[in-house]
Length: 448
Ligand SMILES: Nc1ncnc2c1ncn2[C@@H]1O[C@H](COP(=O)(O)OP(=O)(O)OP(=O)(O)O)[C@@H](O)[C@H]1O
Image 1 (cartoon, rainbow, N blue to C red):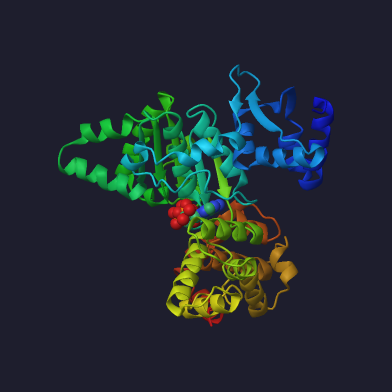
Image 2 (tube, protein in one colour):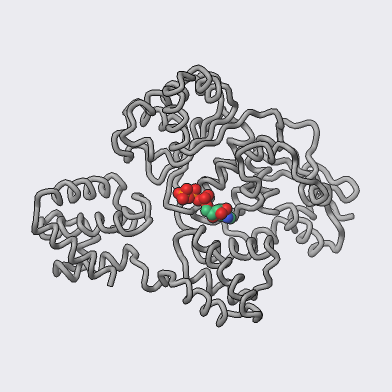
């Protein structure tokens, strides 16, 4: 057996060569080798978040490979936390036990989707922080980030992460009481409770849980009575140290007519943006899905599909299902040509035809005879400011991009600038006929 420090240095070196410097600094440098007994290398990690990251990102399995590469020996990591006496056997060792487990009963009895777990969630740049925060919350609910608020465009995994928190808490503590609802279901339950005079039962149901998950709270907009009730639900749970997780397509202060006291409460915890996955992440998501569904598909075909849909994971999964169905129908192996044929049939907005922020910027700049540089710049001249605001307005109207992302595409402006632009144009549109015509012309041009 090699000496522990020599072994660890070689492993570290291999991690360094194969990771980004941030990843290396965050996850590897923070690990401390404690002992090497037999083939068990015990590593101490600084927090539960780190250990989760190690196992969910399979760093432990990577370590086994690197150790083998360096020493030709089978080294197995044991991951422990600073304050933990009982070491946790890493996932690399635990895999076998996991594989034989059947779906626990709790998963069948809750409204949670058992498929939406941390294991099935692919981490990429756009969701890394949301994923890490979700893990922390599932490990230590009600402590660090309460409420935890996910926001971002359609089909980007907000619901998935929310369910993953619930599924993990149930896995760790099967008695956990969890309530998952959409904001519309909460509203309907509340209205029904008033109608049938069962408000007390309603309160019992919502205020006696350990974890409350409310999806798509942008639909609380303009609903005064529901907001009032939710305010009290929130306070009770929060005061009892129970975890609350919320999702929305935008930040709380951008939800129309959401009471200030709710906006400020939602800001007590952590708000995390989820942005669309980059190409690599999209390919990884498709690969996972194809493997899970036993679909045989070459890498270049997956890359092709991932190249066609760039903003919505739900559509990405739909495209794969479409290709699979086409393959079964045609009795032909899945190839890139077959995929192209299948997606053509779907009449999907081809990524190159889709309305994107750069396309909008191009057309608006042309239409008003301003340069792209000015459109994205900071000049305050009216002849530039109005086209800029119109381009922001159209980006909000015609794409799924979140406000922060739109701000980013306009030279790194703050999302509040985008809100201001949107509101300004929306208000002017009510009376300004010239503007109405400009917007209608531009929309028509963009959709052509
Ligand atoms: N990073 C990811 N890894 C694996 N699957 C993902 C990922 N992101 C999204 N998905 C999948 O994409 C689909 C849509 O995700 P989800 O419903 O969570 O989106 P959402 O952000 O809640 O959308 P909406 O705003 O429409 O409610 C789900 O099937 C989910 O499992």
